[in-house]
Length: 331
Image (cartoon, rainbow, N blue to C red; front, side, top):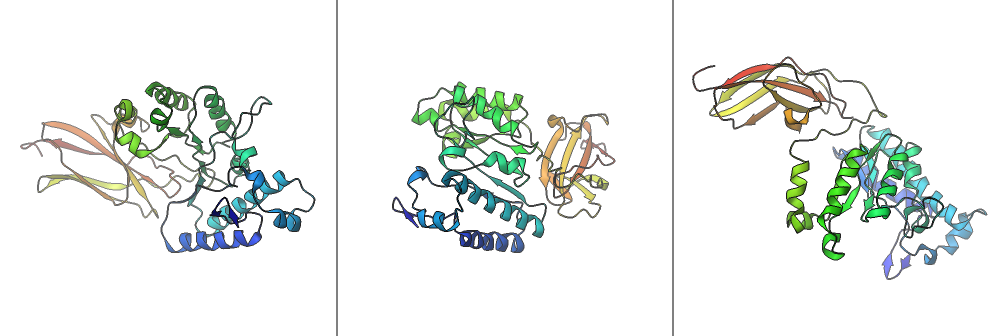
């Protein structure tokens, strides 16, 4: 239907579900995707004016308009989640809702997902029909911190990655400290990471933000395990070998026949180290049972370890290490 000179699929029409499900099913069945992510999974802004009176009269069944609209989105989310999991249960389902989920402390906090665009994203997490949320939290101060806590409260111990509005440093003249403080806060709350909007503002190093972000992301980060889907620990790799071939340092191992495996490679000066210490990670998300890199021959010896992660990002224990002297003389 036409609304404000744009065409929208009507969430109240069951055929909308059928159409979108056919697209998602085609993708999941025919392509090796890690996830399906939704952006505009809601009613449009100023939804009070959305022209769905006919649909509401046909399918509303005496419900309040706002409740019916939220149920329409919830119904689709439930259908698409169940459909994806029936095909490939490891495919992650996520979306990017508005940054403020609902009014807090019995106040109307302005634009929020629940009231403004009928987007009950907390319900999707709590009812087990979403694996991850990337809320668009492009606000600051009291319009950011309490709402970040609310997302954690409604996370159902699943993945919450807040989107931080670096573009506001240009459009609303925010100081860089607003973004840095939000990184610190969301890390303190053990959220699963941070996303940034928009990329051009980061890469242009607006107000030095790229340099600040680099200070936070010095080392690779492993993906969080989706233990609510599976908590089985895969077998560790074995037969790890290390050698230099044509001047390139090469690690190879046997993967233990884990399907859709990825690998994390660690480097340590001794055999006793913490697998959760990111300073030891060389690379993660490696797709093949080998890894190559240029290494300086500095006459130092290192232990190399590899772990396997399955399709749900459950990580194995470390394999038996390979000790290698990076030297032109010692082998």
